[in-house]
Structures are given as structure tokens and as C-alpha cells.
Amino acid sequence: MSLPARVPEPERVPDNVRQLHPERRRLAEWPLFLVSVLMIASLAIAAGDHFRRGAVLFSFAVVLAFFLRLLLSERDAGLLVVRSRSVDLITLSLLALAVSTLSLVVPPPS
Image (cartoon, rainbow, N blue to C red; front, top):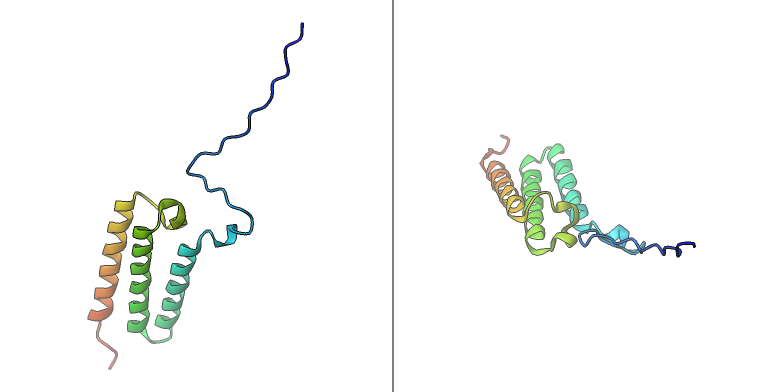
């Protein structure tokens, strides 16, 4: 007697793993890309002897990351998700407040 052939079950993907079509894969991390572009631009502006403008743009990028993390689902926020939503929002709000305060408190060059 031979045993019946076992049919392999299809592999089940967990719900938290994003299944993307190849053409959409490039657009999956647009929130992180947008925030990163703004932060790099702000650092370039600050390096070009415009500290206050660069710091204000940097704080704007952090505020944007805060609102993207607040409004987007965990799946859509992508790599902006680090910890739980509350921890991410508290961290981003404190960082935005600190950077914006420092950018406005530092006196302009004489």
C-alpha cells in the first residue's frame, strides 16, 4: 500500500508583510523618501552658511514626518514606523520642538 501524494499548501504570508507588485515597489517608501530629501536639503542649506534657514527646514521635515506618521497607517508609513505609534509621535514632536526652538534662539551672524 502506498500513501497518497501530499499536495503542498500554498505559503501563507503574514498580514503585516506588504505584498507589492514590482511596479509599485519603488513607490512603497515615499514618506521616508520625502522626509529624507527635505532633511538632506536642509543640511546642504545649513552647510552653505545659512544655519537658520537650514534648521527651520530641518524642523519642517521632522514635523512632516510627525504628520505622516500620524495620518498614515502602519502599512503605508513604511520605514517611518520604528516603535509604536505613540512612541514615534512623542519622539518626533519633541525633536521638532527642540530643533525649531534652537533654530529660532540662535542669534544670526553679525
